[in-house]
Amino acid sequence: MAGGIKRREFLVSSGLGALGASTVSGLGLVGRAHGASKKDIPKGPLRIAAVSFLTGAAAAPFGIPGDNTFKMMADVYNQKGGILGRKIELKSYDEAGGADAQVKLARKLLMEDKVDVILGYISSGDCKAVLPLSDELGGLMVAYDCGSHELLEGEKSPFKYPKHGLGFRSAAHLGIDNIGMALMIKKYLPNTKKIAGINPDYAWGRESWRVFEVAMKKLFPGIEIGVTLWPALGSTDYTAHITTLMNSGADIVHSSLWGGDAVTFTKQALGMGLFQKTRMAYSRGEPYPQEIGQEFPEEQVICCAGTHYFLYPAHAGPLTNGLWRSTTSVTTNTPPIPVIMHTSPLPFTRLLWRRPLPWLGGGLLRRR
Image (cartoon, rainbow, N blue to C red; front, side, top):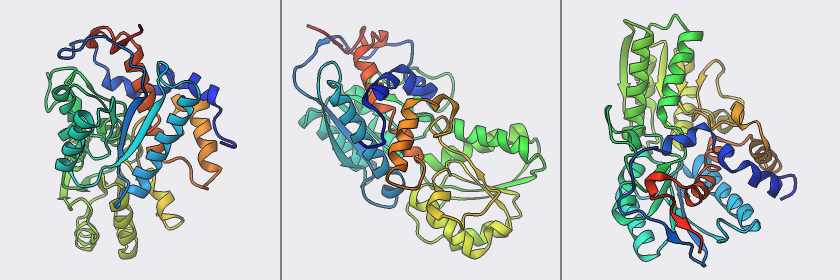
């Protein structure tokens, strides 16, 4: 990989340190997996199923860059002997089709194909449907992208922790995005009086708005809540929504639209003059100035997926620098959020298989 990260640099940096602070969100320090115990290390390959959007609106900005990162990391690990001496056999699967389709796929992967690990998903709805199968079917799952804070934390405190014995997440959830964005608005836009929202009508959008709204009410007592719009995921025409927002009188419009939806909305909003009427606050807007190009309006609020950002201080090391070199050697774009987020699951999986985690009976495997 010319100009890319060196294998030794990658492996050194992809232990605990490369996981970043967000990885800890999947590691409870109490509880025990149902029936979990040490096993001998099999001699065959480590079969990993990587599930991302490979078709549809989310493929280009999220799924495909992430899947390419999975393949790159698997190759690097394999050139160093794999995980516990087992070469990684990674196969990619499309996340298209909705939650029911992903539940069927997960059952097939674990029960029929006998994969060792499933790495998925991008959609919060898919994650919430599939991750509970980890304990039911006795298969290790690592959720690497979906932002639902309820995936492991439950709807209200106190809640069972860890929520699943064999289901983990390796990425920051939406709380860090939306609370962080509210804090930024408080600091830099303290005169905000009224907010509105446009968010996709499923778990990710509903939870993103709820967390942002609660945070804003805490930081801005008496703030006025305007219209809240809920377009379906995958919408292609936002003109009616944009007209409503232009007439809302909101100082800031919150949005967790993502992937192709966010790009489509922003392009239509540019053409209709929305950005002359109000300011957008994108909870995960980091990829879209690159997707839109020079026309992307200035002075918008752009948040990202917490620690999964190429300029985040904890990432100022060989892993992210190598990803930067590898990405910019073939494109003028900086590594988007999915590339950074997809670096965590394989090191996380390696950690789970090697470390004596107490709730897994001291570790998943033991050497013969």
